[in-house]
Length: 304
Figure 1 (cartoon, rainbow, N blue to C red):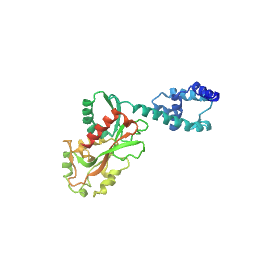
Figure 2 (cartoon, rainbow, N blue to C red):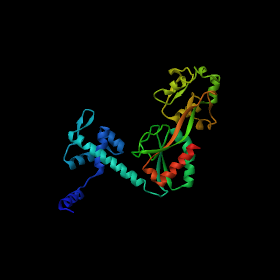
Figure 3 (cartoon, helix red, strand yellow):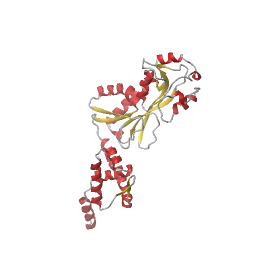
Figure 4 (cartoon, helix red, strand yellow):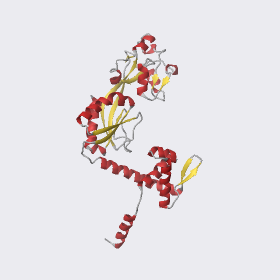
């Protein structure tokens, strides 16, 4: 090895760098404030602030300046931000690669699913899995939003939209059907109408903040306005409990609705709404035997 190359190698080995400080800088820059970054990293704000200050002292530059609404990157902070992002991607790639190497059928696997699937369809699948592989521990991440698998918000996700991220693998396990349901007593009070146009006096429970259910139903022959939607929530399980208590009509996967004896199909002739069910995982961690076992169990359970 040439003397110059040896010097470069020695200089590299002498560098000490704390990734936690770089991560504190990166997340603070992305979130725009120390308080938001502390919540994202689950750290106390003073701890996070000390990490950022320590990085500034270590590098000998100011990374942030205070503005009226939070923190603003200095020119030096802007120059270093992309390097911090590259470090973050490298750290995630290292973690994913290490996670994917294990062949042991033990350890934790995080599964992301909507609250409806997590409450009603996932438990029997997990019970069978636990009986077969008792050393695998499952964390259920309940979210009606799409979990970011690349950032390890979950290892495997149950989704109803086709994945588009290039670093994911997936299986389309079935085409599910959503139907309208109500409690028998509620339908009795309505006079048990049968045609879609006869539900002008009915109450529906909206599950989407955009009001998409009204447009979807009107496209199928209903004649509804905002007065037909006195309730809105963002939880399928809360919506379902409201339906069961006779507060209105809701829409849900018919594997859940048809299995519940406290409700019945609200509109006999209503054509179901088809939607896909996908099981999704990151392609790197899919090399793990533990992940494959859980992935396959979800494919079998949701596809049955």
